[in-house]
Image (tube, rainbow, N blue to C red; front, side, top):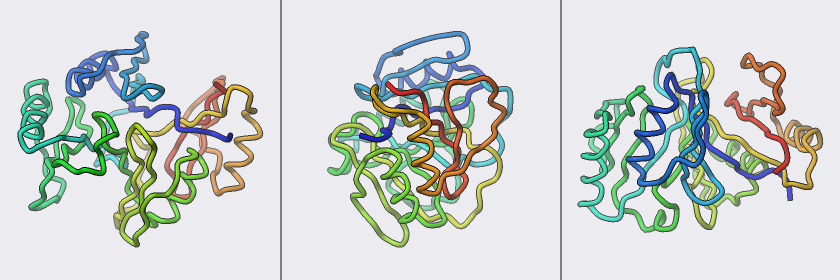
Length: 236
């Protein structure tokens, strides 16, 4: 077994406040809390982790979360709950669509989807969505990085699915990546795996080393073929 999806990481000015917003919105608990890092459970074995950063958010995020709903009433209730907790509706050019686009208290965009059968087993988060110039190529790379199978391929989108937990989806977007992403994925080798071996394997798949200011850390920061940063953490 190679690396697997370990957690979803979001930069935050105030990790504790962000964690409280997302925990209340998703209806899941806070799994772990430290001064500069707070983890919210998504599903068993996968957390949404908020880490403290000094850099302000600039521009639309290249990665975002889609939330699942089970009915029109549930979708409306999720939107209302988000607004009550400090979220707000935003316009990113989505036009007339059946989902609702919002931003959390620190401005990170997310969508509350209409009911879709394909997300019935994902838990509260339907998908992590990544802007991509080439969705299919990105899905192939991330299948190698996460061990998740490619479930759909189309020139405009592609997706990876797991038995339980959010999908990882790639959607064609014309704009280029600008600056460091506020949201990224962490992958982990198995407990009996080897960090340098897995880093070398991912580099052979098209990843490159990335410098985001990390110093003296136990993980390795890479970027995927389109420049999206991600971390390979120690075996676990």
